[in-house]
Amino acid sequence: MGRPGRRWLLSCITGFAFAFLWLTDPTTSPNNLQVLRKFAFQVSWTTKEILYRLDVGWPNRPEYFTGTTFCVAVDSLSGLVYVAQRGDNIPKVLVFTEDGYFLRSWNYTVDTPHGIFAASTLHEQSVWITDVGSGSYGHTIKKYNSFGDLVQVLGTPGKKGTGLTPLQFDNPAELYVDDTGDIYIVDGDGGLNNRLIKLSQDFMILWLHGERGTGPAKFNIPHSVTVDSAGRVWVADRGNKRIQVFDKDTGEWLGAWNNCFTEEGPSSVRFTPDGKYVIVAQLNLSRVLLVAAPPVGSIGNCSVINTIQLADQVLPHLLDVSGKTGAIYVAEIGANLF
Ligand SMILES: *[C@@H]1O[C@H](CO)[C@@H](O)[C@H](O)[C@H]1NC(C)=O
Ligand SMILES: *[C@@H]1O[C@H](CO)[C@@H](O)[C@H](O)[C@H]1NC(C)=O
Ligand SMILES: *[C@@H]1O[C@H](CO)[C@@H](O)[C@H](O)[C@H]1NC(C)=O
Picture 1 (cartoon, helix red, strand yellow):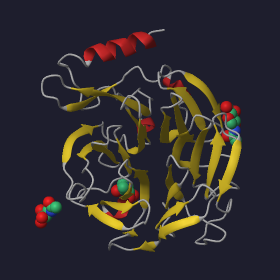
Picture 2 (cartoon, rainbow, N blue to C red; picture 1 turned 120 degrees about the horizontal axis):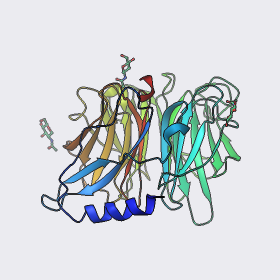
Picture 3 (spheres, rainbow, N blue to C red; picture 1 turned 45 degrees about the horizontal axis):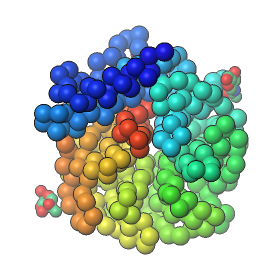
């Protein structure tokens, strides 16, 4: 009940000047256990400013969040939201509708989820998880169907490493799968590997950058990756406090943004559906930045358009944006400390 009403209400509200915009997060109180938040997309009618409003009713029943939520993926083609959480004796992957209804969960073969990505075509719904566990499914990237059946495992399960044949990972952080099925992996979060790898859909390495360092195309904890519609790959190079950008076909380095992240490196990077903004999470600062995306051509400097300041200690880790509605879903690893 209520969900169709909410959607109607939202689309009405966006047609008017919206008087009570919350750019801070008003609902975190000592007994609030919700650890995944949805921010609905709004455009101010008067100023044309892009603003976000916390959707306090999402999900319908937050008590499904029994662990620590590390990541979230939106499959807007199917209207599904996948959330992965860590903890003992709990379901690790929760599946909701974009309207906030819980559908199902699984924990089979999921050890310690870090990043998640939903890749959907008209023929296939799938969800990919990077696993940083040390158990028998750790240090892998796994593909599941929408019901949690394991379809593919990349990496050497249970064993971290630097190898390329066979492929090994060390705490792979995140991945992105584009429309053609090509896969972009950031590996990782463990310190051993600092790599951006592009794989074809049959898992051949197409190009890679694999050196630790501060220079162009070198990394220090590459933590999140996304691809824009202009064919550029964007990497949150967290330890170097910058975002680096590459050509998706050649892997050529196109530029970097440093100036927005002097206080803390970015932990998550995603685009809004219109490609105009990059949404970036900063973990310890508990904030989400809305950054103007450069059109094709020079990357230039970055410029923050808006900031969503979350409550202290919320720690936004990874986020995703609905390609349909522009809503931002944020996985908060700190919110359940309360
Ligand atoms: C898997 O999830 C169920 C609840 O859905 C829980 O009872 C069980 O302990 C979990 N198993 C593991 C290994 O975490
Ligand atoms: C956040 O703070 C913790 C504790 O001080 C620190 O270990 C971690 O490296 C910080 N993370 C980032 C992304 O700055
Ligand atoms: C970026 O900022 C730096 C330092 O403020 C400045 O020197 C440089 O010209 C700027 N670059 C662009 C492309 O605007």
